[in-house]
Image (cartoon, rainbow, N blue to C red; front, side, top):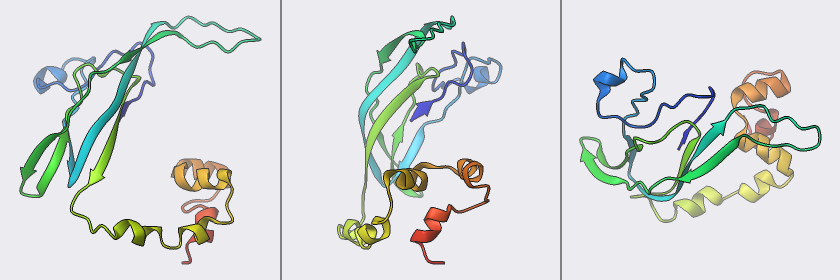
Amino acid sequence: MAHTAFHKGSKDSGYSKDRFSCAFYADCWPVTPIQLRRTKVKFIFGASIEIFSYEDTKDAKLIKGLDSNLCLLAPVEGKDGFDGDGPYQEITVPSNFPPGSVMLFSTQLEGLDPQMDEHCKKGVDEAFAGLNLTDLNAILYRCENEEKDATGENGISPLYRKLTPM
């Protein structure tokens, strides 16, 4: 989970129960708790970055980042819940989750056939055998707009087309 920081100086943060005041203040980021269905979550790591100065520190021989400090976040526990759609775990974004913050969770789906993993792995080696790491990166992580920019085409990657007969 990440709170991106596209605009310097913004200090808006995480969850606020007071949604009425969030409607009137630009520095309030009303994030509702996130429900993950049939999933158990475990907090692994969380951190935010505190930037002290946005002063330009260009140096022809050295790449130097902004004057900053990495702050660890307290663990966030998933809370069990149940509603008409079934069981879930709920993650509440902490109230102090400013831009530049990230949290990492491990997840485990519940109620799946134990043989599902083996079934999903069938044919993977053959499908990816002729691809290098650059190909895999493009297939796994390139969004549609990046694909359009790189290939000039709309829609599915030519590499993906090689893998899946249509």
